[in-house]
Amino acid sequence: MNVLIVFAHPESKSLNGSLKALAVSVLSQQGHTVQVSALYQMNWKAIADERDFQYLQGTERFSYVRESKQAFTDHTQSPDIEAEQAKLLWADAVIFQFPMWWFSMPAILKGWFERVYAYGLAYGVGQHEGTRWGDRYGEGKFMGRRAMLSITVGGRLPHYTERGVNGAMEDLLFPIQHGMLWYPGMDVLPPFVVYQADRLTPEQYDVVAHDYQQRLEHLFDKSPIPYRSQNGGHYDEQQVLKPEFGANQSGLRLHLLQSGEAADNRPVLISQHFYSGKRAGYENWNCWNG
Amino acid sequence: MNVLIVFAHPESKSLNGSLKALAVSVLSQQGHTVQVSALYQMNWKAIADERDFQYLQGTERFSYVRESKQAFTDHTQSPDIEAEQAKLLWADAVIFQFPMWWFSMPAILKGWFERVYAYGLAYGVGQHEGTRWGDRYGEGKFMGRRAMLSITVGGRLPHYTERGVNGAMEDLLFPIQHGMLWYPGMDVLPPFVVYQADRLTPEQYDVVAHDYQQRLEHLFDKSPIPYRSQNGGHYDEQQVLKPEFGANQSGLRLHLLQSGEAADNRPVLISQHFYSGKRAGYENWNCWNG
Image 1 (cartoon, one colour):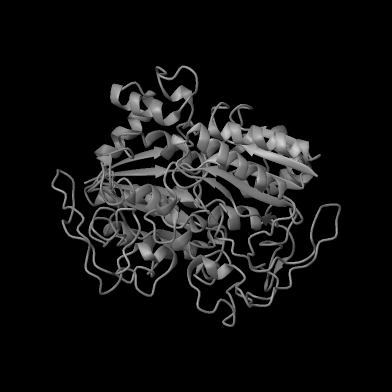
Image 2 (tube, each protein chain N blue to C red; image 1 turned 120 degrees about the horizontal axis):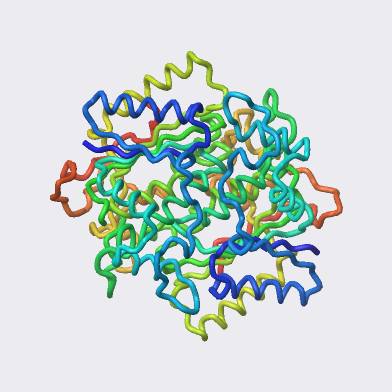
């Protein structure tokens, strides 16, 4: 299989750098082919602006969406964007390795999504008319690919539980995992999270490395987070969850298949890419670091 | 009062640009003093890296946190960072005007937070030992200031309700509003959100402008979102919400004061900055665009 690691940390000799190197090593030993996009080290341009396009369609007002749509179609995007898109389309799995800064990804990685996720590639895909809102949330051009966040956090685990002062990690990551990975069709694996990352002893690092190696070895067979698919029958024409689903749930968990519910009718993908062909059942996926 | 508007859109002639200009006009007419940080137009450096510091303490491995702590103390940060910090400390209220891209803020604004929010200014403030986890979530150097997001969204309102396919807007914004604004002590007003922003007719814009003007006129007297304060007695020594709070709630709403609960004991601020001196009571704050 092909694996892309998108690495966003300014220091290669950091914990993030060590985890990135470990992933390259473990995955290569398993026979996978690995590419790394080291965003800081390649001086990745973080800001989405008019320089991302070789020609501008608009004359009066600059619209990133409009320019992106045209340039993606015409192959006139900036070469650095096209190169990253090619890596994404090449990959069977994508790992995002980054430190959580202010409860989200570093700006340089956010800019990677804004620029690489072109109109026609990651959004604006499929039919948009009437009651059809495109191929998204479980469908789209990245369907059949797997994605996983591997992140480091300064704080302690209890602070990131549901009743912890920071809010639950699964909720904090929802805009990324659901909104940026599941949206264009990737199956999202539970994240690998290292807490208290700035005070890890060598002995603790060994434990972390062991756990991460195990996660990497199951990159292609672990069950993904069971997000509901948009077009699988659970949402109504207004894209609102039908009343018969999500009993006794509230908040962002509503958008996960519940134990005992029937799976939705997400289409099965037939392509050159790995895909199990069945929707993951409910799993005790809150045990993220187990 | 002093108001800082942080504006993050590449096109001044955009809806975001219009709302920014409207805010400058309305607030000035009310007698407030307004500064604007137009991040794209000032070529704001989005990436947090070693160039942010005039001297580097570390020799072997670059640590942004360590360098930030030292440079903030020594006044050896990059001048562009110091200038933005001065604006923040000058402001009684801060408005963030941006388009929601991929369920979060543009990378250029994320990089503003990463660089301007120095150690010792926005985090690492107050006592950190034993069971005390610093001055954060309702306390800190920005206490007494107000913050408000003014954002534009391509999608429709029903998609952003609790059962809508994107997840509830209040939950999607939690990492920003709670994690980046409430964290260093700012009171966070309900956001002003414009949906279907890319297909607004002139008539619809007039309605939006009218609504926004009303919000701006109440910038200093509208009740903020009633997040719980970290050190106000509702969280235990592990920073976990005590069992007697948040009855019948789950998810991120647990971190809001509930109707009928006693207010927490957030300290009252006495300073030159505006502050009502009392905790906001529960308000029907889900009606964000009302």
